[in-house]
Length: 266
Length: 318
Image (cartoon, rainbow over all chains, first blue to last red; front, side, top):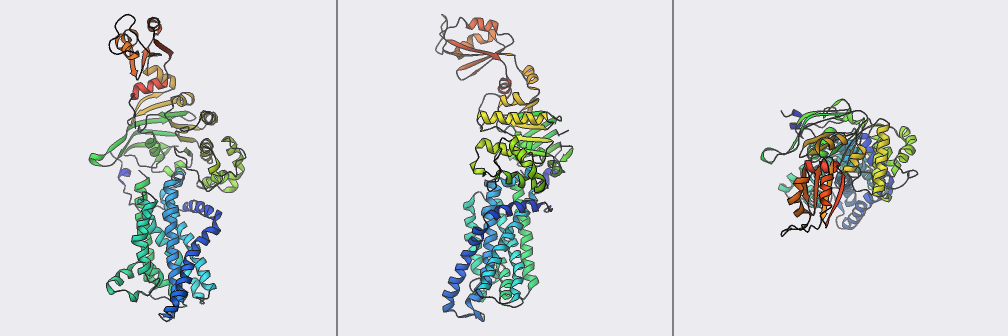
């Protein structure tokens, strides 16, 4: 007689608890040791791109959607660098902890379930992405590309964007055989999405057929929320955009968890 | 009871690709004893431990860990268990002390509670004063000892060790053994897997030999030896000239064994260049061998390794 528990699917609903906080704290304590280089690393690349493209291309395109190109670019930069920070964390660092260092295995021997560990990775990556995003927001404000107090409302958007891309990245981590595998995710998903989501140019420039796809991408929804806020306007369709990001987070986390359970609980 | 397993079956895969790794295993640990689970690679030792900890769901069978049903209440049960896994899983980004503090956090133990115990835990692991040492600077033996200290942060009733001394030098092994003995003397129950017979013979109050997912023998080391094998072993090796009789095309201990072993021993196994003769009384065999120039002998009491090889065979397990 087989026990029903053996047949219980890996797709059972996530069983979450506050115990995830101990695992989150572990990641935070490691990060704290290298906090400064980590923040600078997260900051340097997007800021250089924003200033380089913003001033360089900005000379050629003086106005985009009624604002200077660099002010247009600021909101996009904020979103895609948040996406990258969350993605890198769950892919490379997450894979190290899961596969290389066997940190997750050690934690599972303690009274913490895998569901809590994956949830901690999700929230941790979003937290780190929020830190990176907020630092970029500070740079944007310091350069005077945003002057509205509404820009502060972009911080929850950053967190939600971080959650969304952490969840998507965790799917990759769950199925990755090695670090090399992540290159596919970047070249086939992250990079095209960055180009299609209105980060560098308005989506109105895209052909209609492409535009429908581009509109559905999670990064598009993040940009639709963050850009107006940085420009001092209330975004339109807030519920729709936030709803899509939240829905993708939940669905992707569930799938990632199922795949991780399949990988580790056998 | 620290651990009770009955009728444990674990199958991987489905249909024609299904592999049964554990096939109906019964095991019961008594409080305060050290129990060794022996078996060749692939015998199902690690799978049994994973089932016991609730890290994988059994296909069939009942498990109670510290009195709680597993996997249903595995998490609660693991509050009272310490684990030393086969592979090192220390946090390389933390110092020795930080590893203990963070791991205690997984049990809900606050830093203020664990910090005063750190000198004692590190001393137990023979790592006095290594509080701030980085993990990369530790030797393999030191890492394993720190992993042992880490498994004790929650003062476990049951300590589970998966091949705790594999890859360690003799000095490091002896230190681990001494510490494990100290733990059982203090009342901690220990379950360890190993394929070092001397480790099991020295440490275990009771042991079980596992192969292909089934228990082949169980009891104290002496009981298992007495129940499964003749008490005396004579190992025979070297050149055999036939002592006047024609040795035939083959020579050596194997040739001798095919002619004579059966008359002097109950059982004889040939492995490579050596014949292992098992007997209740070695005197007639030794007298005979004294007249066989070229052959050399080693007479010794039977040990656990003899039992293990008898029960699990001499073929390689890769």
